[in-house]
Image 1 (tube, rainbow, N blue to C red):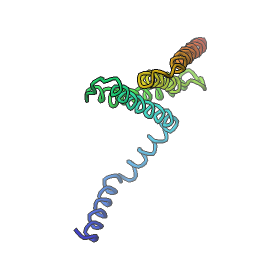
Image 2: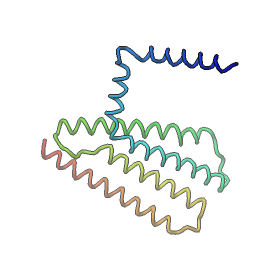
Image 3: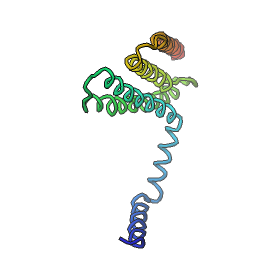
Image 4: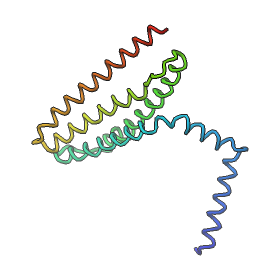
Length: 170
């Protein structure tokens, strides 16, 4: 294959994609609208995905260290299913938070933020448990795990307090 043929194929592919995506700009406008709607949640998604991947990595490392067999089912469950579930939960909670803000007229109703904090605490706890399996001599990690669980409980208490305030406004 020569370079001019590759340029020709890529040029035609690009032009075809532009024609497919241009219904008077509708598809581009829809994509931009979706991106802008969920712009406030992208950092939450990145944090959750990074921690989920770190959990899988440390889990595989801990399994190798302790001699536990690693199966594709465990990896699929740990990586794809859990991450997919987290993403669905985050998007649904973000939409729910927006709806609740409009219905109850509360400016600070951060459902997605609360869910992100709880998921991150869960993932950090799992990562710490894996690191304890890898390096059992690191005793301070078990204390850090207890601290993370207390932070999670505090976040749940704060959310229950905000729900009580929202109840009174309705």
